[in-house]
Image (cartoon, rainbow, N blue to C red; front, side):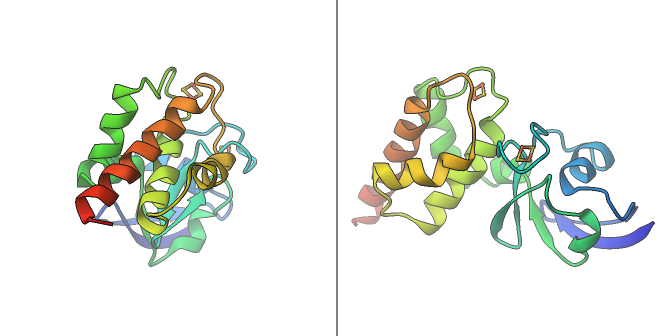
Length: 159
Ligand code: FES
Ligand code: FES
């Protein structure tokens, strides 16, 4: 077992983890943060997307033991922060979540677009979201929600 201390959603966490414990399992099984989902567990579907030190990663590809000193934000922390309240409202308004399995990872990636690509075009939004799979919505409503949120933020910022 390997001792790690990291910050998860603003709280300091110390645990002993198996060397091969993946971040998604550490979050879900050890910390009870079940908002992030384990889908393919092979880095393909994006359901496990979380933020590590400001960048989105796939939780099924990162070993928890490598995260000593890291800062992790999950969908729970992102939602509680209010950072994407407008995006979440657009998801609801447009029915962009159906079964909801992809939604936490999709929102984590969409939040990354909002932060780093405020001028993203619709094509660029689609490109950024292309690593997050959704089997229900056909993607249109999701892209619409991100596009509307970006437009609203640009309007508020006078850009
Ligand atoms: S569960 Fe990690 S990418 Fe699918
Ligand atoms: S809403 Fe069901 S997989 Fe996306």
